[in-house]
Length: 123
Image (cartoon, rainbow, N blue to C red; front, side):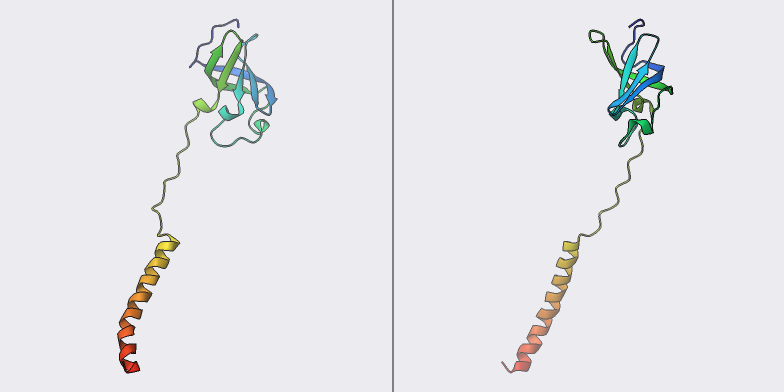
């Protein structure tokens, strides 16, 4: 590594290779890092090539620097705004709650009728 790269730095690089697991990014003439597939964007990425191609200029954030192994982990996603999560809707009454409610009503009307039926039967 010719230049000293630090975790948290934001740098511009060029895509030099695309693999199923991520993309290699040249940060300078001799330093290269990897954007893992999980760090390309928010959401599911099935195919890296759908997002990056060799020669693309990208802005990345440095997540990790392993000087001993000469590996740099990069992220494009870290520079993107996190998408808003869907607002949870108020839960609807469950089907079981509706059935229980109908059963309760059914039994109430049955209880009311029961007395009439007993009297009609002559007991």
